[in-house]
Image 1 (cartoon, rainbow, N blue to C red):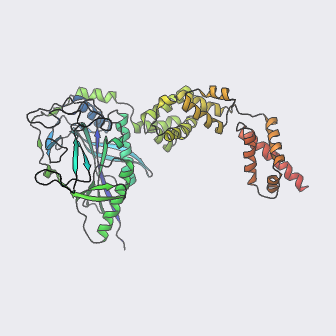
Image 2: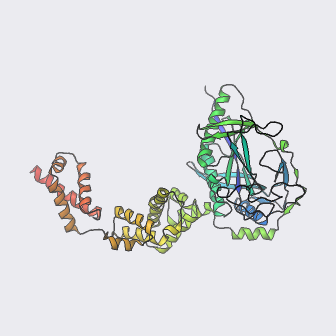
Image 3: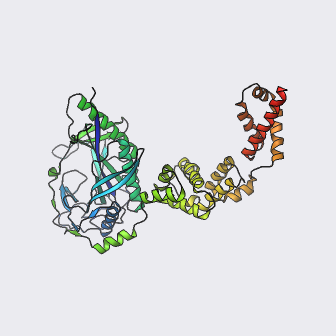
Amino acid sequence: MTLEFEAVIGLEIHAELETRSKMFCACLVVDPTQSEPNIAVCPVCSGMPGVLPVINQRAVEYGLRVAIALDCEIASASIFARKNYFYPDLPKGYQISQYEEPLARNGRITILTSQGEKMIRIRRVHLEEDTGKLTHVNGEPILPVDGSASETGGYSLVDLNRAGVPLLEIVSEPDMHTAEEVRAYAMALRSLLRYLGVNSGDMQKGVMRIEPNVSIRPVGSQALGTRTEIKNLNSLRALERGVAFEIQRQSGVLRSGRSVTQETRGWNEALGETFAQRSKEDADDYRYFPEPDLPPLVVDTGWIQQIREALPELPNMRFHRFQIQYSLSSYDAGVLTEEMAVADYFEQAVRTSPHIPPKNIANWLTGDLFGLFNQTGTPFDPARLVPESLASLVGLVLAGEINQATAKTVLSEMFETGKSPQDIVQERGLRQVSDAGLIAGWVRQVLADHPDQVKGYLAGKETLSRWLFGQVMRLGKGQANPQVVQQELDRQLAEMKNSANL
């Protein structure tokens, strides 16, 4: 009998906080994809001897926003510590982080999966500083004892612009068991961070990095297996694929009678597989001890309450409200509330046209309008097409003034020009034709012009009626009312069939 396994997965998510300056110094936070290397560096973040760090109050505020939104227990005092390890992009030889006494503990977040909602526990939320960035030239470097670059290994360039940028690390409990749950958790947390205005969620720029810890165990067992950690995944696709691969790999290892090695693994996107990087460190390996240059971080309870009261409506709360208030499906509510800008846009469109069913506006927003943004490769931008214009377009369709096909054409022009749908319809003469007499004439003309197709229909090839319908719509230049066309076509074909049977 084949032994069945289940995965046990926890996630560490590192999110850069969108403050103006770094965590412990006054250097500006710059976009690493747009800035020259090493232009935002000072003695503090470059690790010069004798300098003193100072805690960034805005970073603490942002950390508290997240911890409160995750329903965490906020520590009355948290301690910064030195996490010691050597790496070329860590100038001090240690990272200032929190470990034993973090900013917050014991939170939770609800995720939505194909099996319904599930609550994931949050173990800890803590503040730390980011490292710099290495760029490897000609592959991973091999550094000899004298520090020179090996002839075969290449060399690395260090950019310290990112060194010292505020990071918030959010660590879950190992409550996930599938790659789907892992993706749903990351999406829910990303959405939360964006709603709170503390992180852009732009994973391609590295502002949010995910590290899943994966182990497997026999189904029914409560013991935890040996875990591996996949480092620095920067897309939801890589996260889902990496976790799925690692579950399969570890299952194969155990089925073969071998043991899983505790280690850190990387992800090769091209090959679609993880690979060993180094043996996994434990907390003892980092030799944590309290940062001697920083006092305990004591947060005033009044400040915490002010932050709590200023929080926006959170994604999960809005998700449930949209279903109740607007009679939307779970799927529609999920798509609309994933991003605050989209949810705000939808509600503004609904408010401007209370006579239009919200479902119709949701369909046009998440279908056709999203499609136009995807085609242009641009992120959703409410200024591109104001909510009132989209609602007006939907209103024209529901009123029968234009049909669906014409509305799609109008929407494309609205997207390009910013004009109102009424102006476009008027300027281009696109108003829908519902005149029964005119449409009856178009149907007669199409039936007369295509006798072979009519003969085939009368002989039993009833699918030809769809082709004939298309010809009538073409003759009407796409402006004919489809319902009226269908009714009239069915009527005239039925008359022909009756005459043929006499």
